[in-house]
Image 1: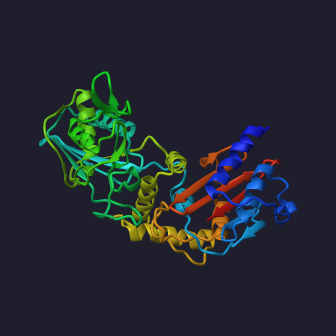
Image 2 (image 1 turned 60 degrees about the horizontal axis):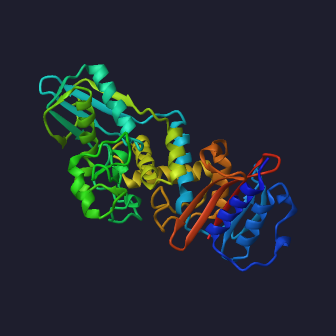
Image 3 (image 1 turned 30 degrees about the vertical axis):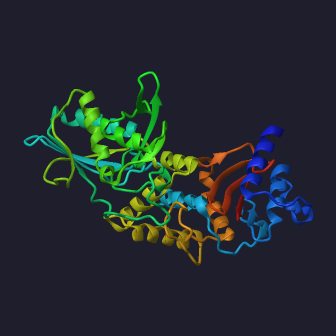
Length: 395
């Protein structure tokens, strides 16, 4: 049973994202075919339809159009584009796929080589697990240098729509990135010092001066460009030391030596885990990381923006039946992306088996998108008969 409060919250947020509009009744425009959808959701559709420029599409779970407005008008999708990127990855790789990171250890020079392959969720827990696996498999006791291989991605990939700020919104991609290339910190009054805001992530002394320069007491910031490629190795060095491994030397970028015994270690997270977090937090870094890694998987390394867009474009045409595809990147950051409500409807029909990966309220599974002047929402109304009704609202 869906409570009145839950229904109110659902419609409140749907109306909020669409913006305030004059209130008057046009209930006659909402067909009786929508009777299975909750009253608050119908009311939200009516308000959306009062703006003649809004794109709207509602279908049943078989694709039968129940209501539409400007269905074939290309519009900026913002973050609902992440549904396309997620579906392409799930279809190409499978929900149980795990991203891999390779390692090789030279027992003569005591150099540890680590090669990234685009894991979008190489967070502290995964890095710690990676280090433990290396110790277990190699019996490593001494490291003179950690060499980070970033060659699986082309250098200096620029994602359209990102800026140059230290805001995590502008996080950049890479073959091996730790914690989305960001630092999460807080001020500890007891110790009168900055500390990590994540218990699983040590705050390295190297970054404390930069944090002070932000004049923030807490938050998450993007790493300086020159340290992004090294950060995974710096965290590894700390974790290895905590495990009793002697780490004497520096962390540098380099290239894995294929003559050494290569260990291929997989992420503790499945692709389904990745997609759920990507959609829940609307993580731009993860979406574009997935797109780039998918491009390298299909067309071979190094990963490039062109290869990633090529995979998404081919998937949209072949699997979704899109006749025209206008994509600039995979997260929805760029205003050069264009999608019609009808195309989103086709996408949602195919994504339906994965609908539980979306955020949910009592009456909807959904994904929102927001850029300045742009508000979008896509997902599924939950009918009173528990059927799913794909819907798209774009303004």
